[in-house]
Image 1: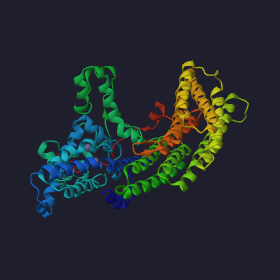
Image 2 (image 1 turned 135 degrees about the horizontal axis):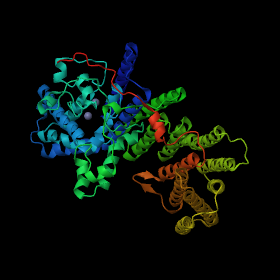
Image 3 (image 1 turned 60 degrees about the horizontal axis):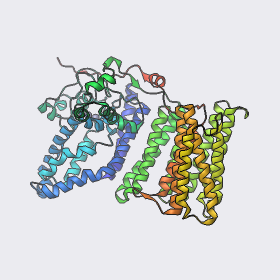
Image 4 (image 1 turned 135 degrees about the vertical axis):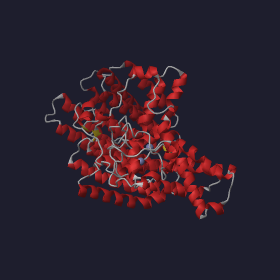
Length: 606
Ligand SMILES: [Zn+2]
Ligand SMILES: [Zn+2]
């Protein structure tokens, strides 16, 4: 089934290109680059998630169908009337799923993704949730009970979904009688609008008749303002999927009464227990206050984002093409790489990271994946490249922040950081080659000594005694565990290595405790990731081969290793050119004054 989307993708993009060109020609362009990339990226994530939730969607449906279906009659369902009835049934179930998606908070948490865009165009149609099928499958069980065969169900589900693509446009005006029978551009614009008169209306997938039957229909009368009443204001695809879940978890956590803790999830979206609402007040929604989120980006970032987007798209389509034939664990590795890429793309578009850091994140993810998937030729390329990019990032950052002389403390810090990264880079290459474990260990030992010297800049030795004791105790335990398995020749080098890395982590933790800022905390987290990565590596090499959730040691060792290197490279320098987290002013500056539709409903009837 994933392959159908691969075939549909070129059609989707052709239509997007046509709509965009038409908008430019008519002087009513409804696209912005970042929004379109964000929406399509969420569609890609949703398709990736679909591969993993297939068991829920197809498995449960098939199980119910084959055990308790009331009326199994394949000949009927495969006839013309059968297909039509199945589509009608599906559209009816979809209406209720969609309606509950707006009227129950936990379902809204999944569905909200489709509504977060403040633009309304064909790319908005592709903007889909990744968590929708965790609960959504329940709504289609009546079809399994009625005896609609899984194959027929799959096809009508696809038809219902694909139909809804074309209605996401502002370039098709009201269509008269069609608007009152079918889901159409006009009545679906209404569905995506936050205007008081429009909110929670027009849920129908193909037929809008359901809305007229159950009292949720309204016509387009005033210009639509698109989005959600609690705007996302972010291009982060993971946060887009988590936004409402996080809010519900927060409210549920702080609610005093146990009933309220549960009610938060089931009541309509926006409902909050009185004690929580009083403690954590939120602004009331006013249409006039709506602002458009669109942080400015340079030409270079735009061009780079387009290139990355195309590469990620190719990756996702390749993933969907082979998904059916691959073991889940291998797919999970590919999924992690694509997620990293999509996250980094959003982060770059909103100015959290620069192009170099985006590239660094992607190459680190690819280095991890090529090791986990057993692709040594590619791994030999990506592994050295990852640390090379980290070195270039640190050096260019130092250059841009005006490091000229190596005698100030900040410059010494940068020099030590670069020395540490260079040693680790050499260690990476040595460990990749057979028979060079001890030289590799030595290179990393030097790297950690440079890290300790770097973390010592402007600080006392080991400012936190408790942290020192804890990391030494951990190191001693780990060494005791390894001792029985270590060859005699390796006992001393490994002991020294364990001691040095424990000291490095202790220095980082103590420094974070003195400085008490976010950057030094991230560096300390990085140091702890180092300990974790090295522990996993040693256990896997000397004690027993590790395997977790079907993934072998290289995945866990390298992902924690890159987390360590990247966090330290990004946060150790006191001044950075690239912002890593947008401060409130930056987000406010990125909000443009108006967010109203370019479409004015013309044939307004009295
Ligand atoms: Zn909706
Ligand atoms: Zn829609």
